[in-house]
Amino acid sequence: MKFVTVAGPPSSGKTSVILRTIDHLRERGLDTGVIKFDCLSSSDAGTYRRHGVTAKVGLAGSLCPDHFFITNVDQALQWGQRQGFDVLVSESAGLCNRCSPHVRDVLAVCVIDNLSGISTPDKIGPMLRFADVIVVTKGDIVSQAEREVFTARIRQVNRLARILTVNGITGQGSFALSRCIAEAATTDSLIGNFLRFSLPSALCSYCIGQTRIDPAFQAGNLRRIRFDE
Image (cartoon, rainbow, N blue to C red; front, side):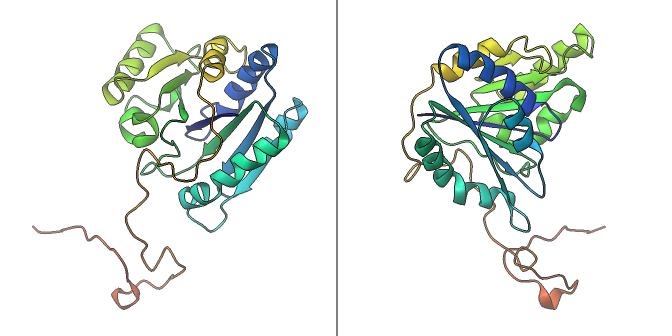
């Protein structure tokens, strides 16, 4: 089964891009399912089902969404294989910009939109920097000059990725993304594989439920800002 991670900031258009791309994968005869990793809530399962796409949603709740993703992603892959999919797309939103869901030897896609701000490529971090394909959406809303500047800023962060412009409403550009997925390598298991970027180096007391604001209740790997005059 082909497995692909698709990640990007909330409201960048990931679900629309995936749906338009699945239409092309269906034309190739590839049955495609979706696993959505999110933080607190998601209505995307219903959106996918209305388009005839089998989808499953996992919510991190009170857990770190990045740790939640990596501790469930192989089980998600096994679920996709039991479903008999030819392609399983993992969609992640709202993961912290410190981390990235991308896995070595697994096609990694980052979706980013032209309206997010000219400095956004610098802020997203490894989710963008380690992607194989970068999909830029909402290009029809901004000028040609703005699109070119935004693309140049993306290229400064990731010089190797293929950059595709996709319209999530009309589907223009999604055929090229479907070709990337159709040509991706197959993945049978993620056990023993590696993330392309590490998770945070340690937990602190607030990660495990502490709410008291007091140095006496702060434990773990903490970093202080220096306020020297």
